[in-house]
Length: 118
Image 1 (cartoon, rainbow, N blue to C red):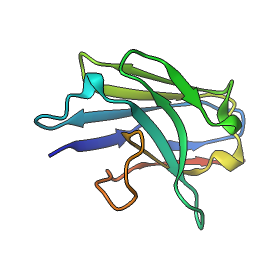
Image 2: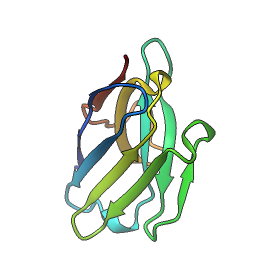
Image 3: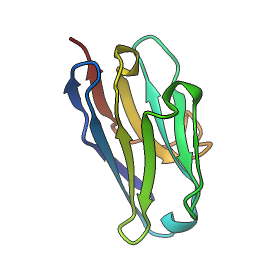
Image 4: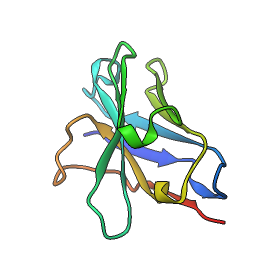
C-alpha cells in the first residue's frame, strides 16, 4: 500500500518561491521506475496536472507553469520535489503528488496548501 506525504506549502506574496516535497513509501511501489506527477486543485475547480517526471528524469509541464516551476526527484530517497518560482495568485491551490495518470477515485495524500496573495 503506497503512502504519499506532501509538505512545503505556505503563504507567499506574488513573485515569491516555494519548494514542495513529497515522500513516497510502501511495499512494492517501486518509486524509481514510476512516472510521478504533481497536481493541484484550486477552490471550486477540478484537480489538474501541473508537471510530471519519468523515472529517468524527463519532465513535462502544463503551459501555465513552464519556465517557473521545476519538477525533480531523488530515487534513492523516494522523494519528489516541485520548485516554484515567480508565483502568481492563480497558483493558489492544494498541491498533491501521485503517479502520472492517477485515478481521481484512487488513493491521494493530504496535499499541501499553497496560497499566493499580497
